[in-house]
Image (cartoon, rainbow, N blue to C red; front, side):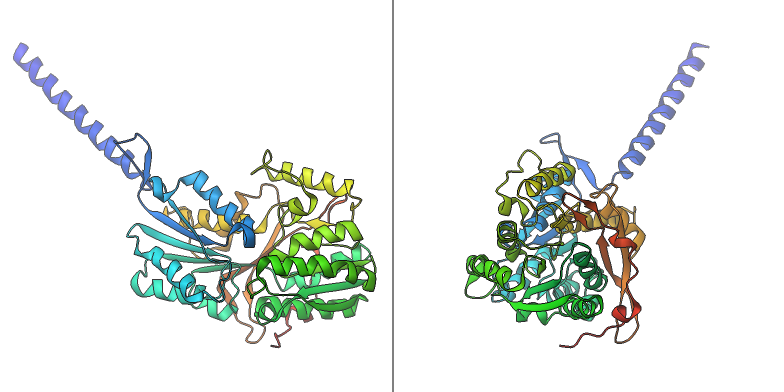
Length: 419
């Protein structure tokens, strides 16, 4: 009897051990993105996501979005998921270096996705080189500078601010704020881009239709010999002259991030209207222009917006200066990284606009976005891998405008880019 009982006990123990082993195996398989590191007790990523952004001087918000991903998923340098690099400020004259730098991310055998935000000239070529040696890697471009058909041919997904709709809505908003003149500030390189050049054309046409005077002013390109400092000094010197020439009921808009801070600084001092930045954010230009420290509010956009808003009110700019409640550049960097992770982990589908919106929404709680796939005005073909998005404009000291509710007239949507 004792022998029989002992045999039963052995069989039960073996069965329980088998079930436990299988359970542990299945549990390990449900978390493919990380494994335990015996050396330090921390989680180690089983794949990497690379992201290239500009530097603090050229596109700080984009960089901060990459830093948010590192905060969430760890740096690849210390066993985490995210590998972050920055491309040169003078990326136009160092294009081959930039292309090589981006393509080199694919040399990492653990690399599963590469994101470039902003997608400066050369991004499509860098993606092409990655495709040749690593076709398995996901390739995403945030705010590509290259023409839509160029970036669509090489990227799995590209995302732009809705340069078509905003060509209309920014002018609509300027008129809502009482603007009689609209000054568009840019330079030849930007105006050669379809995304920026077409928006300028739509802005001018909208001004004519809504009874607002349109003016184009040229400023130095920060990637030229004058550099960022020289371009910013030009804006500081010219804005008072422009205000005197066009009057205080003039709305100003610039296509370059580096121009934004000096433009805001002078408008706050001399008068004028500012609807929103090219890539809107409460961090875009406002902290430097207002001389405020947002260290304590870092990462908390509700608190950032509140402090920026109060500072603008204190400067007498209530109802004349706007932004988006959340940073566009920050959201695109972080959102595309999250979108890539979800696709790799089987939580999202590549090419799904709905899944893309959900990933962006992680970083913009309660914000109202409007999105659509890009449609080529020349061919009428709707892209499957380029999305256009925009958010309601927030006027500091006044509140949200109903920007996303505006119906953009079809004639602007059908407008073709004239180089």
